[in-house]
Length: 240
Image (cartoon, rainbow, N blue to C red; front, top):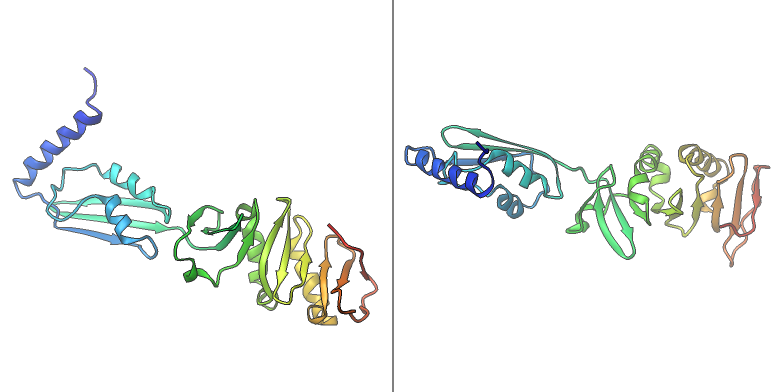
């Protein structure tokens, strides 16, 4: 015979649950563990089970799937402990950065998945990444910056250029052009230039580090930077 499914299965489960509830198997407590950022009203709605409901009147797997649809939830488990306790264990996505694209701001996790666009002020200390392709590529750059706190404190945003490399926007208005795929090495060069020549305190419009053997600079229109001591550092024409 054909397996019972769909509405018929739900009806059967409801009848069975009610019958067992009449014998005392009713939900007494719904315990949620691991919740930090998932909005509680949304979570309760996704669980859909409340005190007094039949303990056996719902599908644990279905409830789990409903919880996993919440944007904050990366993984979840639901356990039914007779006679009347339901245990929900959440593993939430960890906030990693703010992504700006086409005027919209959203919170992303390390993998680049969008988490939420609500209450972003609570995460204003996170790095800001900008442009198409930024979320998926952000982790290596953010890691490289985090390990170099002297630079991190100067950066206001990282802009993805052509979905292949990064420009750093500094608080001073300076733009630092990084090479494709060699961000950490370029940041080391930038830190060395700043340590030896106070580069980041100069009135510069941009620093171009896309070539591995030299750095190119451009002064702001209303200022002329002091000559660099590093023979490999040369003034530059405008780059794209």
